[in-house]
Image (cartoon, rainbow, N blue to C red; front, side, top):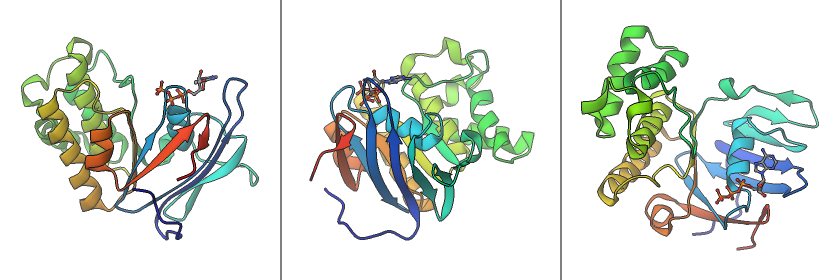
Length: 226
Ligand SMILES: Nc1ncnc2c1ncn2[C@@H]1O[C@H](COP(=O)(O)OP(=O)(O)OP(=O)(O)O)[C@@H](O)[C@H]1O
């Protein structure tokens, strides 16, 4: 499942150069609209760093990030679009929910931030929580939810924001096998229906095999040759 070398017109194009003493990153990535690319590799290879760099949360020392022909970052040209304005839906490894807001409020917040009215955001948030199987805990505070439930709220929040691209860092690790399968299918449907690119960081061969169109292997911050 290695991507053929042709160029893509819409989707995500990135060259990420991050200089760090422990591990530098130099990665070129292209993900077409409607595609899921799995980013795999051993612990410490730089997968999360790459995702955070795409999201605008880790400064680049070189390179560019372009989404659907919009330049989000270009180090040489001095352009840096703030993370909040990049249009990515992100699921972080540690979920990063608002601990003292309810599941519903966490998801509605993302939809509000993306332009919906308060009541529309709440209605849609109910729908997303039902989609991820959490209709019965909508009013539970995030801090009271189990790890797997928090992970599902994080995915609902990312999808609810109507992102222009998805960045998913180990988004299914805390889930049982049945839920994992259902949520992989949900992500696939969403990517197909909205025609957006998605990057999935995973250690799970089944995640990559089921969900990804292409696999990119990172090793010590570099792409391992196919
Ligand atoms: N904020 C940071 N500042 C400096 N170095 C960092 C920072 N975050 C991560 N690193 C280092 O960058 C390297 C890559 O880490 P990263 O988390 O990107 O790897 P990973 O491939 O996602 O690993 P894992 O599979 O364990 O999640 C590691 O050596 C790590 O110590």
